[in-house]
Image 1 (cartoon, one colour):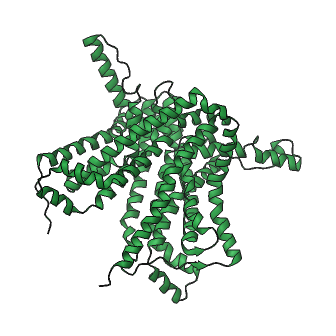
Image 2 (image 1 turned 180 degrees about the vertical axis):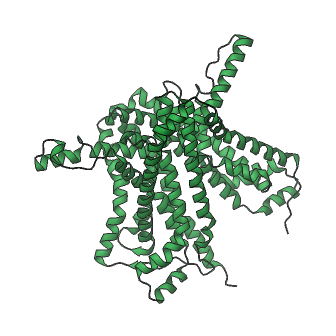
Image 3 (image 1 turned 90 degrees about the vertical axis):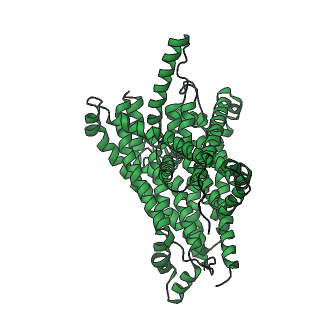
Length: 562
């Protein structure tokens, strides 16, 4: 029986360092609460009566629409590719993840270009039917709440598809086969057996999609949808009220914690998803007739076409007309800024993830576990909220340092941290720490504790055990964690817009600024660059999820029956 060894000074160092890191990561949330609760005159009363009710109502309607759209699309497509045989199923199995590569703000400006009054769709309608003005015919307005739901649903449904597909794959085939022998039709099998078993996974997927929906600033700005995120941005920048923005941000945090509770609730019941055992095998797929197969193919192709193909073709067309912009100094500067900031943030994020996961491995009990869990909630916090929480402490430190350096040495340091992009890197690390930490924690979980015991008996301390044993084993996991963090940093818009130094552009802000001016041609090339970079983790995710299931299935099939 393995016993937890006595903690040495080196072990204590890992714990103290991890607690310090967790405290630093939680600093922005503490700053938001402090600013929001500090008296700010009549600002809160004004926001409470004029801004908050409308913003809250719009946000709730947007989330309901996106939750319904992503839930139906993700569950339906996951069931079809998992449980039915039809032409193109194997390709669609991974292709349905591709819309994740396109940020919502890029899809938003793409559909504004396609479906607006001057776009190709309405222009074709006017040409075909001889209409002269918009009053001669009706066409749904893309710059609306409905348009935002349409765009976000098209981009965010893969979160539900991914979790639900995994749940359908691990459900015991024997459970489904017994239902068939009892006379269950395909529809009865879906609604009475598979769907209830997959409910926790569906809740998790929808929760993740809604977190991304709450974080969005680009799409809602293009569509003129005044959500809480838009109101925070507008109150801070256009009304010059940081306190009012913090109070709205605090209201957003309440919604975030409700979503986190919903996601945790889903995970708590996730153990009921699988009826697996040593006899686990992939479920037997239904053979579809000709018209049924055609309908299944159409249903699965539609979200891929809407969420990726249409925006991708538009971006490729617009970018091909402005290839000279590839050598433009502004574009190259934006590429360099995006790559360098994302690389630095990804490296720091992985290092912090290793420190937190290893400290928790050394001592999985006590306050450290709670602190690490809190430190990993940054992914759920919208970028606009994080920006407010980061701006105040860093600006205070910059001002303090500038005053001391001026008094002691006569040197004016200015905004040393905020002006150098440090605040932006800090925001990226806090926001995407959960992405990296989840990968690293899973990697540590697959390393047997016997290796740690063996290293200790050979005289290795905790630091030597980490560097000589764990890190070489974890190298593939660390690379994938760095890759996922890097791409997420490349796509992040809200925090980048609010915390970037003056005259500092990234690919994301270049797209946002150009689209805000209706200069969609200028936004095409940086948008296409972001999409191409975003395809890398999507391909990795599709391959790893498929190989992981094959590995788990083969292991279960090889297990002896006891």
